[in-house]
Length: 352
Image (tube, rainbow, N blue to C red; front, side, top):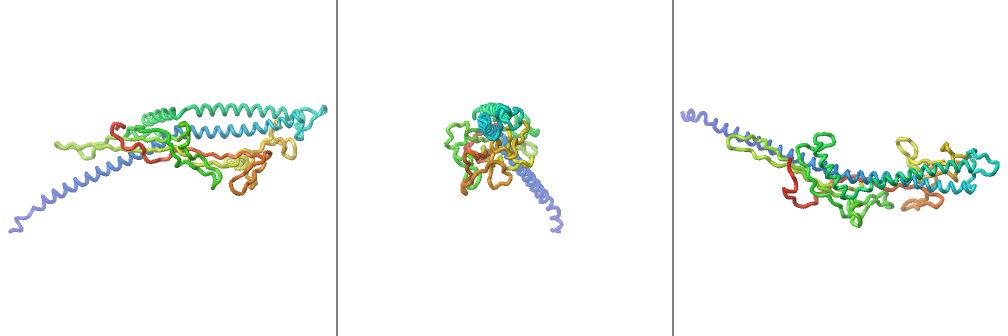
């Protein structure tokens, strides 16, 4: 009979146990939501910090491209001037004399006309390259920071689109300043010869210093626990904080007269024959006196120009008559770094 009196006592235990499990489940789900939102906030901040630095890195990469184009034109102009002097002095195998037909492609007069046209065209291209360089380099670092802030505002406005941010967050630029240090900067073109960048702490002009920026993303997220009776679930704040800096991440080291362009299958800068209007050699021996060569590695069978001489240790050298054009530079991109602004207060950023 005592056993019969105890029947049904498991019901309260089952009820309280089920309620406890339900509370724990809701707490786990809410905690998982907090973690998910925190990861989302951090991803949004990381993407914005690296993406906004394109304001500076794109400008510097464009300047590098234009500088290379201007360098090739300057190199070409120097050769054209030398060729013009040779034909004006009736030198370099061109034929001359009163009985020579001036329309003969091997005559000094015909070569002079072709070389003069090539020279004027090259000078015009060089002038355009220099003018473009002035336009590219006109924005100062303060201008870049202003453009960066405008880009972040546009990034926020375009949220939910391919060129926009995460609509759930408010983006705030916490800091943007020149990076004055010597790390993250050296890029070696080979083991020991060429070092690109290096030592930004010695830069006397902030306009030539890499930027470092810091961005905070913030969103106020409602709790997953529903409100009931007098209990009101408190929302939580998801905050992401990220920083990035501009770095020279890859190097370019090549002899443009011998390295093959994979798109065309030819060298980037093949030999040129400016003395004819067809771009071909006027003489059977490939015009060693008028040909424009861009040089290259003497061990490269594709080098049809004047070879460089290796010193066996640190690189290649050229004698005055056997010159070559060497490109040794690098390309800029953004790299994440540790936030550098110290402790932040809530009044430094806003939440969506």
